[in-house]
Length: 209
Image (tube, rainbow, N blue to C red; front, side):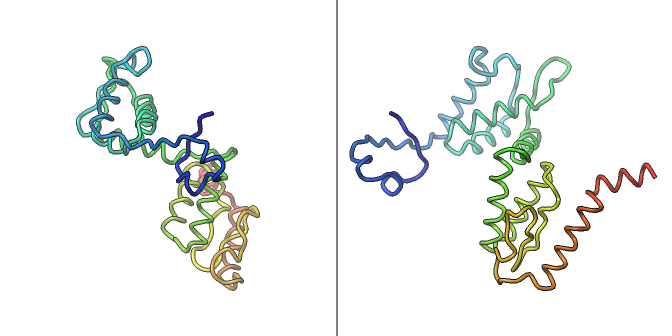
């Protein structure tokens, strides 16, 4: 049996199992090794992206290697996504520069499955940021939900309260026990959002009107 973990086995694996296991530490790959893997993936038509006729400019290549951060799996996953997002030129060549790479990776980073497992992962990260009094983190996860098409009902105040919403975050989750005036304001705002709909709905109604 083979297992893998990103945690320290000495702390996360029980002693009887650890004593009967051979623990191998996988060290991060060097930038040079990642570069070789990247070049091969771009040119190999059988198991790579050679059929996609793609060329990475030096700045994009270096950024992609840095994105991999020693992990070939992350590098190859990002490469596959970026190449398939890039439209081909009239001659069939996909030329990827630093700007195109950043735009594609941004699309990848904000992917959000509002009806699947990713929804609960993002919600969990959002609530943890609120409970840790991390407004920057909470704003990031909130923006990621909204950008990915998540329900606007998840808007919550940052400070000493958060909106109950769908029952996934209690009003006493951050700071003090009660919402008080601020909490009532947010709850009123959430009801208004439910009744009026999103900004897109409002814009569409105004256009039709």
